[in-house]
Image (cartoon, rainbow, N blue to C red; front, side):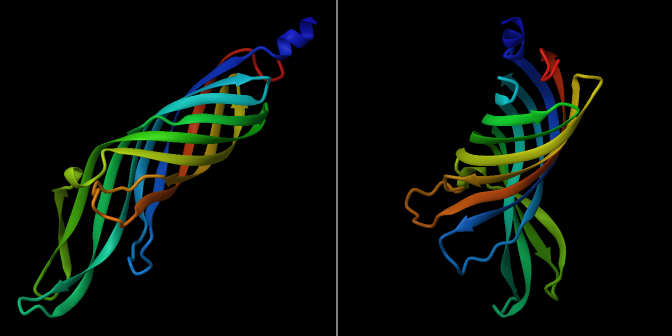
Length: 215
């Protein structure tokens, strides 16, 4: 009975992780062409481990999403002289709520699924500046926060692998697939759906408090 009670003792993991978000958008208009953009990702993490493998937790997260779309550069007569990329970046504060599993001790693997409510901090459009030959020579920033939806809701699947050092320090790398459920722009009159999607690659560390997996 004593061993059984010990094996079920929950413990906690606090940590931090950072990485990059390779993001884009999905639309319902096939002719709307976009390309990936790379942003940052920074999180403070918490997990409660129960039954030695089940994890319930959350994060405080800053993430940058976005996409680029090509625009045609014209001269004063309206003739096309080139094509440049308009960069759209959206910075969010979000709070992922996660349910997952974790197996192993010295070397461990884990996975989780999450719902992620998010709040838009700032949206920026980086507009190309071109010379008379249609060559991009610089970019100007324009605040696009008023055109973007203030709230977001996404889903995420994450998997990772890590190692445990000194019995309580867990280092890991992970990859996550994220998909927004809401339109990225705030236009109630539009039927044009454009939703964020992305792959997040992260590295992180957790510190374990409480009873360990097999100790």
